[in-house]
Image 1: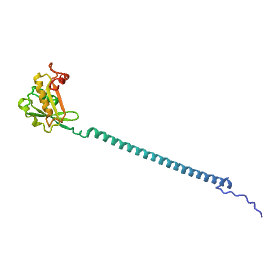
Image 2: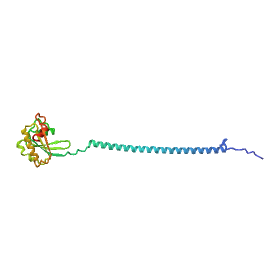
Image 3: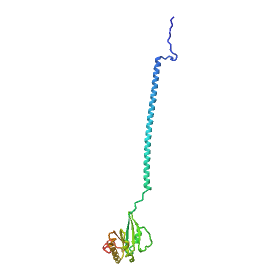
Length: 223
């Protein structure tokens, strides 16, 4: 007895052929691989981007630290120059002897140079020493009194002098001018002064009877 065998399809295929199933499986596998590849590429790109951002931030941090260090150095340098200045070097000092007849104005002149204010000037008896400051030096001026009883002791105070200031009264009489000339010549010929620089100062130039420089050069004590 013959039987007719009908074709049987598994129920889970439900109308799909075996070829269709194979094609679907291949498609799903390809899709899954593509997703994995895309995910892997995205992760690698994210990692590269993160590495780039980290490197950029590290470089910026180094520049900021360097800028802060330079600012600190500059601020410290300015502060040191403004607040921590080294004291200026000491000015050289020179010992000078100041001579001249009584009434020539030696004491008044030195007081003005030292910015001293006095209502009245008392003639110097003996000697006095004043430190006269200048911009680049200090003169320790030893003033000797010009009275007759003191002049004979002038030479005792010449030792150690590095310069001489001779003050004369430019408004004095001819007799006083002659006396000034004699004292000036004696000082210039003294062994302890003859090699020193001399400053001859004609005082009382504000007096109507004052002699000009030209007149002093042709008359005693300079003529």
